[in-house]
Image (cartoon, rainbow, N blue to C red; front, side):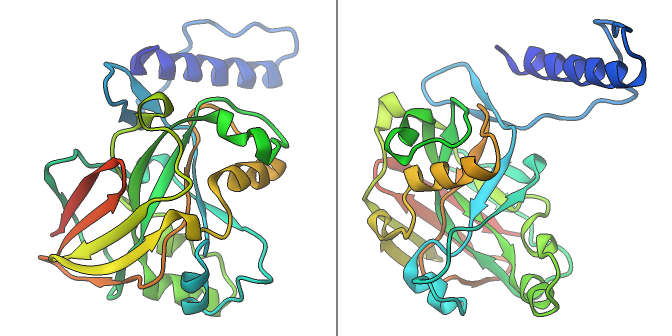
Length: 262
C-alpha cells in the first residue's frame, strides 16, 4: 500500500469512528474530508519502492548498564521504562550523505544518543519474548537527540520531560532494512563519533533488555501495531554537540549515517 492510500484509509477510519460516536446508526461518508492535510511520516525500505509508515515512536530509557549509571540510576533494580516521540519528530538521513541537523531552540546542552531501531511489522498484546522477534519487520539505526538541560530540569521538578526528548527532528533515522536482508541484531559493534573522534563505543549484547524483551514488556502496556518503531537504548558517554560538529553513527551490518549540526 502506498503512502497516499495508507493515510487516506486512516483518515476515513477515524472519521467513521467519530461519526459513530456522534450518532448511533449513522453511517459516515466514505469520502469524508478533513479541513487541512497532515503530512504522514514514512521511512524508505531498502531494496524496495515501498515505504514504512510510522504509527508510533517508542524509546526505551537507560538500557545499557554503564549509561544507566552515568545518568544516576541503578540498572540492577530498575524495570524497563519507555517514552514516546511524535512521528513528525523523524528526520530521515540517507546513507552516504551528511544531512544538516538544526540545533534546536531553548537548549544550551544538546546531546547525541546512538541507538539500534527495530521496526514492527506484526502487532499484538502480551507477546512472549521467545517469539517477539517474529514481529520485527526490519532494523535501522538512529539518533535520539536530547535537550539534556531541559530533560534534567524537568526531572528535578518531577515533571514530564517531553520538552527534552520530543521535539522537531529529535528522532534521526536511516532507511529500514528488512530482516530477510540483515537478520536480527543480538550483538555487534555500535559506536558514535563527533568530528572523527569516538565518543560512544559498545556492543549490542550489552543491552540490559534485548529487543525481544523490549517488545514483550512494551506489549504488556500497549498493543503494538504494524508501523511502530522502537529505539532500543544508547550506550554510555553521551555528550554535547555544537553548531559545526559532524556526528557519524555505526552499527555492524548497517550503513553509517552522518549529520552536521547547523
